[in-house]
Image 1: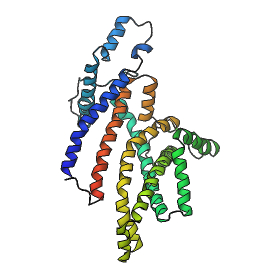
Image 2: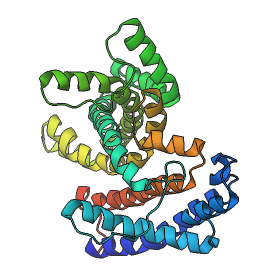
Image 3: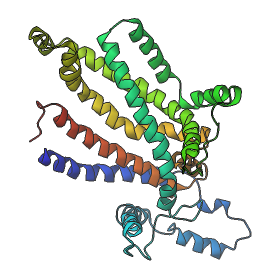
Image 4: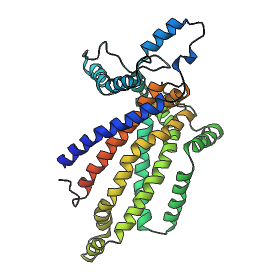
Length: 335
């Protein structure tokens, strides 16, 4: 397992470099100029100095190299300095936003907790709902519960967040008045009443994102369980007189979790895509909202950095999924 992990980590380096090059070139070749919004009264020599300060006067390959160094070397040093009070990154050039002229990663650090709080909670809720639904639907195949679950998951697959979000706002915020329609990112939880307020404002954005997660994971869980329930080892376990609960929840469930783990691990980066629309609908001041604002403002450094962060998440969780294979199934060994 250790050899496989090291080999995959080494392979991830050229993969991430290629992805970063593609992202950088695609956005660099896109039309647009960060100086387009500068007032016409600004003298040309001042604009030239502003372009130089943003690093736009250098060749393409130099800008790409500096961006990589800033992302992988300088920004981790900034994080280390903030955590331990050191000065390793003092005076070094960082990735600056064209829109705000401030470091991109500082804005990410401010917005990331809100995104992780909403997205993380929605993913956990979605998984906790999806797994029991998938298991029971497979065990009671073609029952009313199974058919109802299939119908609900098809709705979850079919309806996008930009429709379910306003629909929930219209029903539960406007008509019923149960929950707030706007997520207050400045709210501080310091007692029970403030916790209830935080819980109420999280319910709708969390359920919008959890609906898609539940639909996807429950279908994977059901299909995997059905495939294993008909295997010979299940019939052997039942013939030995093992209780049905042990057969299903121990033997079948463990083997069935192998493809589901892949869907769960690979779905973590993908949930950030749905969070972009959800954060805009519910006014969550997270990185999804930051990415969308950067796209509208043609803020290429912010878009490049956020897009590459999602790519890093995809590569990392691919590796985690492969490692978990060997943990869940003793038949799978990489060494």
